[in-house]
Length: 413
Ligand SMILES: Cc1ncc(COP(=O)(O)O)c(C=O)c1O
Ligand SMILES: Nc1c(O)cccc1C(=O)C[C@H](N)C(=O)O
Image (cartoon, rainbow, N blue to C red):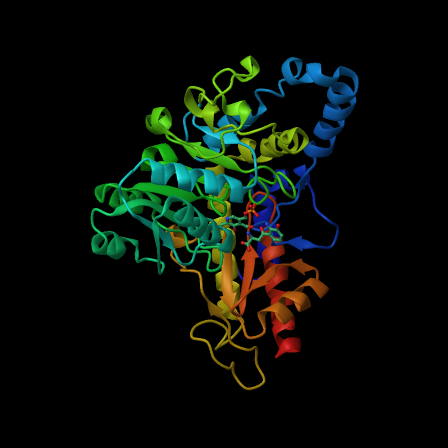
């Protein structure tokens, strides 16, 4: 019976991914369902940092840049992340925060379409995306038009011939909805515009195939599903066909064609190297590089399959909580568990890496869950997010989470 703990324990015993859990330092007694904000610490990371300090930085000082591969790290790690998002080598670079890379990518995208005056952005984008789109629009004298989720096609039609670039999130950070990246990219191209995707909640969680989808530019966090640690550097992908014309605004010397010639003016390097900025945060970059090992070994497709299975188990158990536990918002049955609404579309192809529930007093429920050993988070308005990452979350974790959720809902009602 799928609804029993015994079933969950058996699933874990048969699960080919269960061995990856020990690759992470997960706190004893805590179920980590917050990997869509900050992924857990991979066991390989402390050793990698220790080696970088004790064997590279300490003894070799400046020589480490060239003798220990520091100089190549942004593109080397970029290629590894590229493989996880379906990008052929030479199109992905790692460095800076996601916010800086969003600024870089959106500006460069708009510059690929001179004369076009509208910058489109999904109104459901993460706040930093929206703030940066607004800043780019001010800087380039564009009109920023924010559209509700699903409204991109209609807006392209309304502003026909005027939209230069479109910024979309592949997975809605609130609802967990996964958008159809290939279809939307094709629509954006049909309107003559350039697509910039924020893959922060997708990279490492769902098999986005950026090359196959014809994505122009993409950006994503290093600290969520890639588990690179707090403030891990972000990545920027630019399709090779754009490299020659790519005019990125952050023209740091590491992106120069001849950085050590110390020339008077900026000449962009060939290829993705031009998307390098200044001196990378090497220790964070090496931590991110080491963090990728378990995900690479498991494979994004397998992680995705298991995450969906965990999601199905969760949704099934939620239904079993009783009438009113799922469906339209509203009070639950008298004396029963208060009603929760599943906000994430339940069709597997429309689900990202996390599931979102609308629960009255979501922040209090999240706090009550933490008291019961389950780490989640809440986002306004009344949304509880649970990230079921197949790389380290087990079927037993999901069973125990639903048990804890029933209690948490009861005590917070
Ligand atoms: C979709 C999305 N983009 C960007 C960010 C964050 O950007 P930064 O890493 O610069 O804080 C987040 C989360 O913090 C996010 O969810
Ligand atoms: N980036 C974060 C941070 O610097 C502090 C706390 C949380 C975060 C997050 O990642 C939030 C996350 N992007 C979200 O989807 O809400």
